[in-house]
Every structure is written in structure tokens, then in C-alpha cells.
Length: 192
Image (tube, rainbow, N blue to C red):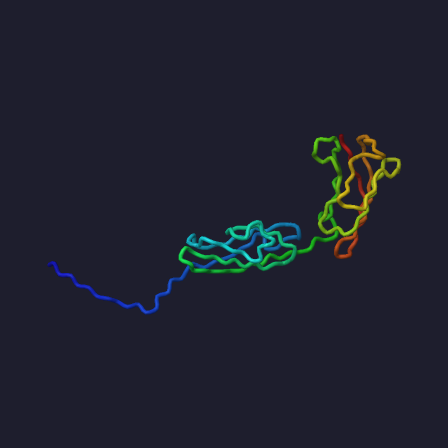
């Protein structure tokens, strides 16, 4: 009963395959100025991540960076496991240009210039505005504000005097980066 027998087996080509690497984006299509959550789905043995290009990412060396590209971009992720084995995958984030219209160009219908730091200045919003003109009138048709600069908003004053709470009319003329134009008119309620 106490016999022991041994043998040797030669395995000439042993391959160890790492689990696949899958790169994803959510969402895969965004409007310029928005963000997409990238993620690499793989085995936890992978310990380092490198995304390329990384310029539009919040962090190019993590498994799940946030991408904010200006144009359609194909991202490649290279991963390395604890044994030095590597894998990679690509994912595309498609970037659509906003239209020269609402909601991509936005002007609030009310603001509160009361000095509390919230909504004290009325701005025209939009990442695609190339040129603009904003005209604001009081109820008697007197122009109380005019601006051709998007970063120059209305603080609710006229001739350095605070205007009373009221409804003011506006005309907005915009030329977008793509050459299209938008003309809009409406009302803005000034609240204090």
C-alpha cells in the first residue's frame, strides 16, 4: 500500500488569456459643451489605466474619466494588469454642434438684482454665440440697457440707478458660429 508514482508532462504552448477589455461611453452622443462618462469594464486584475487623448478628460489615468470633447473623438484605453500584461479598447464620443436656437441660446425670463449673489445679473447664455446684441426696454419704450458682449450682463440699473421691479421687454439678435442667426423678443421680470 505505500507506493508512490510520479510523471512529468511538458506543455509546449500554454497561453493565459486575460479577460477582455471593453470601453464604454454614456452617453455616446453629446452636444458640444456637455460631458460623457467613459468607463473601462474589465477584470479587477488590471491595475493601471491610460486614456488617449487625455486632454478633454478630467483624469486620463483612472478607469472612469469624464470626457468633455469639443469635437467627435475616439478614445483609446490601455490597461495593464499586475503581471504586466496589457489590453486595450476604443470608444467614440460623437459631438453634435448645438443649433442656433433655444434651448442652446437662453435668456432667463426673470432675475433678482438684490445683491444676494444669486441671479443678480441677467446674462444671455450659449456656447455657440459669435456675435449678439441685447436691447432691454421699460414699459414706456425707453431703452434701459444695451450690450453687444455676451459676458456683459444687465444688473437692473439704468444711468446708475436701480430700476423698480417690473416687466421689461427685450430684443435679442444673435449670430452663431455656424453663420446662422436668431432673433428673439420677449419679457423679463425684474424682481427685488
